[in-house]
Image (tube, one colour):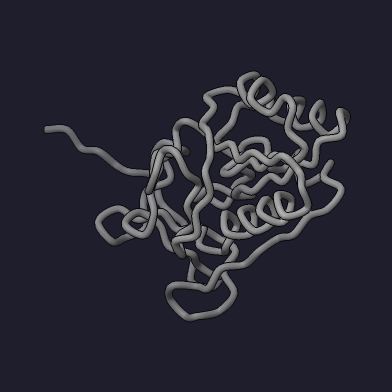
Length: 181
């Protein structure tokens, strides 16, 4: 998070439009941060977008476009890999942005597969919210403290719920212990 993934996706799709390509940005329906009808970066850059709930819907919506941007691709179902492959095989330029790891520092959704099959990969780094170093991990917060690892993997949020952290500042969560009386 906070590495500029959405901003880079917007930049690349705008360049496609400048080149005369018909471009579309698709974001997962579950991502309702900032604006439902636009993809918006944490820095405030935005571009018109449509939402899709499934990879099949992505494939349907992308039909007829020269360039397609997929924001927060880790939130789509595993069929997104086949959908992207189908689009690429049709000649569509696909730019997919997403988190490689979840808040537990584990591979996130279809991202590991997409990283392996992509023709080009740019792995962006954020700035650690604690020390200012290069951050590659996402720290989920609960009341300002590292969240336990037994929570749901997908929890939509921004600065209120997450921080970018370097490996040295990342604090592994614990399992929550509930004691009933």
